[in-house]
Every structure is written in C-alpha cells, then in structure tokens.
View 1 (spheres, rainbow, N blue to C red):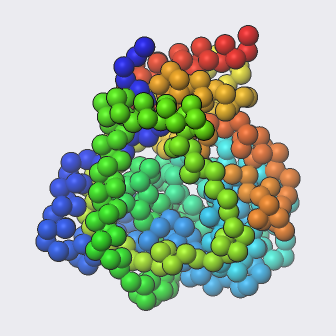
View 2 (cartoon, rainbow, N blue to C red):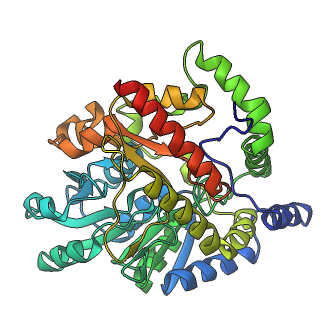
Length: 419
C-alpha cells in the first residue's frame, strides 16, 4: 500500500504570500492600503486590459458587471447550461432572464452550433465560460454576438492564464471577471476581479462598490488562518497520515464528509437575492496575497498542464474513459481535469480506497434544476456530464510518478468494474 495519499486539492499558498499577509496584519493595513491598487494594475497588465477592479467574490463580479451594463428588467442573457447555480442567482438578481444553451460533449463549454437558435428579440447578451480552465470557442461566439449586436460577458472564473489562440482569456468582450477563491489558481482568501477596456463600465462598478463596507478584522483573520489550516491539511504528510484516515473512517459510515458541500439543498427564494456578505470590499490583505500569487501564476499553470498531459498520455487508450478535449491552438490551465465515466460514484469510492481523493465537483445541469423550472430546457450533454463527470487531481505539487499512480489505479478500478 502506497504511503502517500493524494488529496483532491493541495492549496497553493507560497511562503511569500504568507509573509505578505502577516506584514499587512502587523502593520494594521488589513483593509485599506496601497496593495489594492497595485494588485489591480498587475491584473490589468496581465490580461491586457485597461482597467481592473477587485470585488468581494466572482459571483459579485458578475452581478456588478450586469448592473453596470444597464440591462433592462426582462432582458435575456444566454448562458451555458452546465454551470454553478449561483451564477443563475446573480442573473436573476440583476432582473435578467437566463436562456440555457447546451454544452459540447467533449469540451464541456457552450455549443456555438446551438447558440443561435436561442436568440430572440429580447436577447441582449451572452455569458460565455471557460469551464475547468478550458477556453470555449470564443471566435465563433463573437461572430454570432456581432451578427445579432449582443454584448459579451466573459466568465473566466476557472481560467486565469488560459489562452484562446494566443490571447489571454479575460481579454474578450465588453467585460470579463475572475474568481479568487481558495481552490482557484489565484487564491486571495476569496474575492473576484473585473477587467474591461470600457472606462464607463469601470466607473459605474467603482461607484456601486463605494457604498460597500470593508469586512471586519476578525473575519479577515479567520479567513487567513483558515487558508493556513487548509494548506497544512492538504500537504502530503498531514493528509496521508491524519486527514485521509479520518475521511476513510467517515466514508465507511455515511460517505466522504468532503463531498457534503456538493449536496446543497437550494432554497428557491434564497437563490433570488444577494447574500449580505457579498456586499463587501476587497481588502489590502487579500491584494497583498494576490500580488505574490500572480508572480508564479504561469509557472504553476504550466505544472498543471504537464500533469494533465501525463494523464492524457496514460489514459488515451482507455475507451470507457472520456477525456477532456481542447480546441486546437488553445491553452487550458486545467483548474480541474474532468473525465467522463459510467458508474462514477462507485469509481470514486474505489479510487478513495486506494488513496486517491477524486470528486464529482460542484457544477450542475442548471437547465434541469427544479428551482429554475420556469427556464428549464433540454440539455442532453449537460445532463450526461452531470451524471458521469469526475475530477482527477492535477495540481502543481503532483509529479509524473503521481500521475502514473492515478492513471494506473484508475485503469485497475475500471477493469475490475467491467469484468
């Protein structure tokens, strides 16, 4: 039995980011400070945009973008059907109507082929996503948007550093945004950042956020030490000899507790209003951490890509495993390496027994969700991905031998399952 167990995520939180955070804390510059402006300038420079504005979350970034663009109540926005329900919440809070478009089976992103038939006289915008860090077919979508005079909002929450034919994601359309959550490849203890070339959009959003308050001292300290705890718990030694045995014990009596977060029961009314904790400002502490993470972003992304390429190589001949496919001449940063496989839950349980903590993830076929029933539509590829998709670990700390181990165990489990 291999001593090292593989966590589903290992939090990237470099020593320089920890030092920057402690410096902000000990100098009393947790909320206000020069780091916020510096961070925003670095993001604008990295994405090739004129303006960047940091906000409380990726979800709030979407809401503020929609409000800044001054859409009217009842205007329609086209959205990929496979997405987190909270995105739909922000659309509804902005008084817009979501129109779902199914995804492509192998890229997991919005299908340009199906998009045009969803456009009506009320359609004003397209929200495109780069799911799991894989760029969607932006070129085709932009042509359709231009044909029908539609605005583009680019959800790059999972694709910080990805590229579409040599151009960074986040640099397309009227406005784009990123998520800065704990499991994203730029982790700022939460938060989001909006980028645009339109001065009026930047000014509109900045004006809206001026009325928000900074989070309290205790909240930020708690978030920081929570991140440190997660970093410790996902490190190889601690996860293997402390966390994994605990998860294994609980998995025998009611399932892996780490998956409970994916079993949310969404309340229909709660999904139609903005939580108060979204209405907060981005802090100097978060910006200080983000500046340090941006320095190594491309290096960390390249390590993810290398690990994903290993899995492609090791699993390419397995006919019963559907591998992710990338559009030619594009760069995915593989925030998640999502495969498709039958009997997913059984496969995940067996992988865990061998020390690999895979997961089914948190996204959903929102076009079939009961809480959005008035917008439901048939999305067969989204539905299929919802029932067969699972993530294999590819985070930067893993090496080739880890990828060989993951692929070898997966092949073994699949073979045993199909005997």
